[in-house]
Image (tube, rainbow, N blue to C red; front, side, top):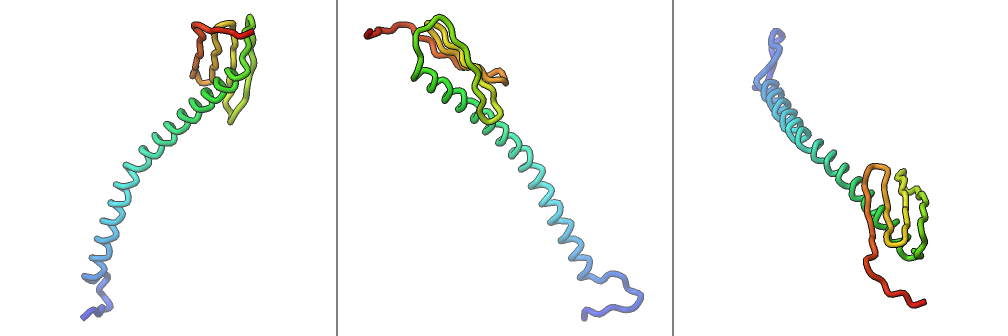
Length: 113
């Protein structure tokens, strides 16, 4: 019963296919509307966490070889992140180029020299 006359442009079956296409397109648009901002926020959060881990690693590495000196400063490059490590007599400070900063301050120490 699915035949066409020469003057018919659309049949009932063609209308259902059009309706199914519109529903699936709207569902796909709805899913993308919510998933893209969540993905962008997740990538931004992971980038901030990566920078924080790099700062923690630089602080740990510099604290392992830290010596009590009056003042010392060096710059370190890692994954397009510039880290400035500043060592003083009582503290080590690591500053990132995006404003992130971590500080390790020695309040009391007993040196065995």
